[in-house]
Image (tube, rainbow, N blue to C red; front, side, top):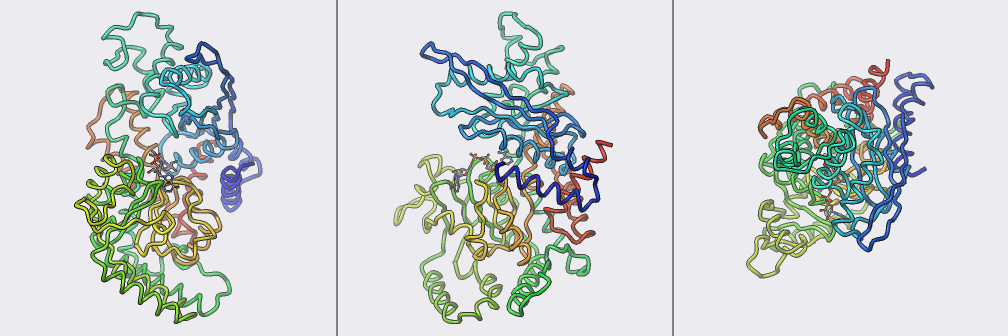
Amino acid sequence: MNTMLASAQTIIKKTAKSLGLSDYSIERLISPERIVEVNFPVAMDDGSIKMFKGYRIQHNSARGPYKGGLRFHPQVSYDEVQALATLMSIKCAVAGIPFGGGKGGVIVDPKKLSQKELENLSRAFVRAIAPVIGPDVDVPAPDVNTNPTIMSWMLDEYIKTQTLDDRPKTKENSLGSTVQGPRSKLYATFTGKPVDNGGSLGRTEATGRGGVMVLKALLSKLDHRHETRDHRPELIVQRPQTVDRRQESRDEGLESKVYSLGSTYSPGSMTVAIQGFGNVGYYFAKIAQEEGFQVVSVSDSKGGIIKTMDDRPKTLEKSLRSTVQALGSTVQALGSTVQALGSTVQGLTPLDVSLVIQCKKERGTLAGCYCAGGVCDTRGGQLITNEELLELPVDILVPSALENVINKDNMARIKATIIIEMANGPITEEAYEYLTKKGVIIVPDVLSNSGGVSVSYLEWLQGKKGEKWTEDKVNGELKDIMEKAFKSMWEKSIAKKISLKQAAFEVAIERIIEAMV
Ligand code: NAD
């Protein structure tokens, strides 16, 4: 069993046990309702026909149609798809949207296919899974290496399987036109479609936007928390049973930092570092900056950038670091002070996210955007590694690229007070526990990156109703969904003195069980 599946099942079992659920319910919560494995032929450009293997795993439909992406990747496996389908059930439930969880994928390296072969593969896969999908049954979406164009091909192929529509394509009945009649309801079979072919405005930005909404919801709670000190979630002060004095003083330091951070909350005074500058990381950075946060570092697979005011802070940092080293064990107790000084010492100044993306587009990588002595947008910029980004002395850390990047090797060096998990599973279990005990507030991926699936739900709804909403309406609906979801998780965390992750799983599992009953 792969680690993602094992850890998804472990936390579900643990949560279900703490809720006092029966063995039968636990078994039902971890077992997919339907597993579809397909082997299908695809015509290649050289005239040959090749067989491919794909999966669609439908985990739980108690709350509504299965929902989840389709990925094309050589490492797609049965276990991975099952883990992702399981987590989709949790994610949709915690977001409070009426979907169950599903996931699919094909074992293929799409980079080795021509555009025509990619289209043939997409269409052939949909023909193979057509009997088990549909607007009220299972609603796929893009995922790794699939995109709106692929969704259009899939939708077109799916409609053919349902309507045997052999009319010649004309302007009126081809994809891209407004489709009327019975075919139009089939549009809701896929989400993540291009906007001119039934897609929703706001979908592209939705995951990053939802993450920033969650961050703001968290800060508004912290803002009030100093008034209700006794009603804090246990995660802030979850101390081990036996703590030595050194550990205790460090925890107190972090706790008071969280309090002071919360009570003086203002985005303009809070620094953010974001690992990953793809769909999720870029929009998180852009929208966080629009909301007034100081985005001081971003990275892609080739590394990250920061911008310092001048050389003086670096000299200061160097001398502070050597003093800190000389202080030896006292350093532990000084941890939070050093952290508070972090941004000043580092001399980090905000990046201009719109210039950074423009530069990345021109130069290919963020690393290419640093030009020493030249006149470029990130003048004063420095390159840092992805590992260094994670350890920057910032208020908010946003891993938005890969899984397991915060682990036992670097957990002790993480300095952020808040982590918003935007990638799936960026923190290992061990690191999650360590950081939570240390007082770091971690908003779990199942909630913080659920903005994407939430707008997929809004796209599905528009498809079902034959409506087209403005971007403002979509964003307003998304805000409602994210804030309600955050509130449920937060209140559960406070009421039961459990971590936000545990609370998110409890909320989700209670909702699924309620629907199953
Ligand atoms: P993407 O492919 O658009 O971007 C990924 C980014 O990560 C790129 O900037 C890439 O350069 C960077 N990256 C790759 N390897 C890296 C490394 N070793 N170190 C640092 N950065 C690295 O992907 P995305 O859609 O932005 O998804 C990012 C994460 O968010 C994934 O875990 C994904 O599963 C999760 N997620 C995405 C969505 C969505 O709607 N796109 C929704 C939920 C969860």
